[in-house]
Amino acid sequence: MRLSFGQQMQMAQKQVLAPRMIQSMEILQLPILALQERIEQEMEDNPVLDKAELSDESTEVDEDAYNSDAPTESEKELVVRDDTNNEDDFERLLNMSDNLPDEYEERSRPSRGQMEAESDRHHDAMANMVSRPESLLDYLDHQLSWFDLDEPLRKMCERIIYNLDTNGYLKSPLEELIPPAPTDINGDAQSWRAEQLKIAESALAIVQRLDPPGIGARNLKECLLLQLTSGLLFYEELQVLIEDHLEDLENNRLPLIAKKTGFSIETIQEAWEDLRTLKPKPGAEFNETFAPSVTPDVYVDRKDEGGYEVRLEDTQLPSLYISNTYRNLLQDPNTNAETREYIKRKVNSAQWIIEAIEQRRSTLTKVSQAIVDHQTSFLDNGPEHIEPLKMQQIADKVGVHVTTVSRAVDDKWMQTPRGIFPLKRFFVGGTTSADGEEVAWDKVRLKLQEIVDNEDKTKPLSDDALVDELAKAGITVARRTVTKYRKAMDIPSSRQRRDWSKEK
Image (cartoon, rainbow, N blue to C red; front, top):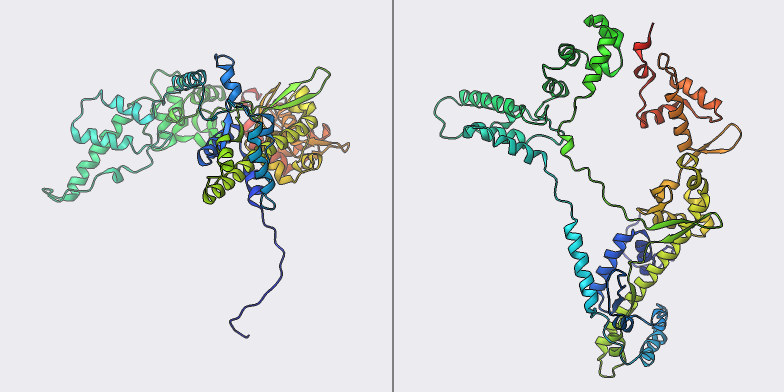
């Protein structure tokens, strides 16, 4: 092999995305709220961009001032091309000011009515903010303050509380919670640790007395036992079941439990019902479970003549245009070359973002309408009538690449007459029925749930039997598919679904 240094030329083909294409894809992928933030950020970074504020119908706004600030149609048509040197576009930009009214002023100065309306909106938003819910640590700390404890015991209680996981369990051994032995300890260090371990055990007993019941447990068995009270009807039976037969209960081995304990099947089932009222994760209720608010990007309206029509919820997006101030600067012969070049770059950037927003509006409308046209049965009759749909089908119908469809529906929501759904919800795979018709997987899952709900619980259907029942309904699937869906739908196995109380 020969090694040498030198220069050589070669030809190669490679695909490079233009900056404008990258920005268009980024804008397309943004949901409505993120797009609003992006526009605000672009306006902060680019002084050339300006917007026409929309008046609130519920607020009185100086209409004359508002109309004088609104961009004219000729301004909205401003296009700065990225080919050549943009000389024609900038010449048109300079000449545009001749057609503007004399009272045309700086857009950035809002009217008094607009400022008052914006102040009211901010005030309402602050007043409606959800307060931070009380955490598990706060709740336990508050209860701990009721106890009259000496300082070492209180510190150990606090250490245990702050080592609980989100479900309220203590996963760390008590030995690990003991602080290091002080250097000036008097006596044997081992005796000191033994004393500290006793303090830790006492502290754990105190924490386990706090509310909610079961807090501070080190495993599921201890958690359930901590929640038992002597007033329960099946107190003794529950103790036995929890201590020795949790796994048998999980697998519905009631005859085996009856044989080992001497309890009747009826007693075991009644005790089991009480056991289900206990909380295996006592601290989970303090976890933040607030779902983030969803703002639909697309709304679906029923047309009078039948069918559905989509509309974008982008009325709150400002109408962007190029500020008249910078057009005047370009027209001013006293503007130096460096400033003129800076304004040109900013105008080009502003035009890119305006075009990208308009392209997003057009693409999202076309993609959403194509989805609605395909899923009309879903909107008419409900989710069980959803049709199989792939992104490639929508891409072919709209005339774009499949990745464009993927970006258009990403993190977007659609408000329909049947509720609000993510756009990705309408894309589902499917299988082929016995008569050759494509059936969506959602239909398969719904049919599977229906079969399980109507089966004889004394002889529940195995997965093989479920395959046969689906085949009778014209749906051909493999056994592994049934098992996969059954587990995904939290449907227990046939053994776990068996009702032993109906056994003769």
